[in-house]
Length: 154
Image (tube, rainbow, N blue to C red):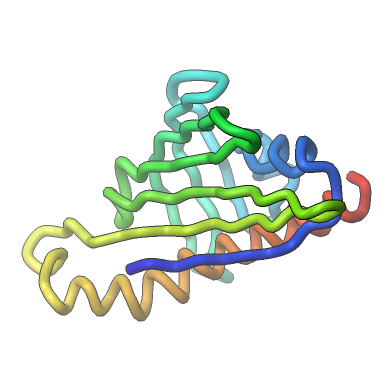
């Protein structure tokens, strides 16, 4: 399963990156996030437990967040280490374009569930249910809310 969410934001790149990387604050600024708990690490490498909602459906996972600061703009990478999406990789990519920044979140996931994970059934569940109904939806809400905060000057 591969998903991608893209949005253009008008605002300072450093503000966009700060909102994207300060995941412990997400429950304060993103209404669909229930909690983010720092389990270990700090700075550019953290292990966190994250919980969000997809409408009434609660979801929860653990992930390693790594901020890569080589090059002109940082990238944020996640690797899910616990939950239904264990093994998922996620990337946030920032592309400054004058007064705007294109922000892209991509997800790659091949289920590793016992019995059905690597079968066609597991792939179909990931591709048609988990990807569009949960992953892309939550990422879309995250980007839309961060865009609104940045563009409102918050």
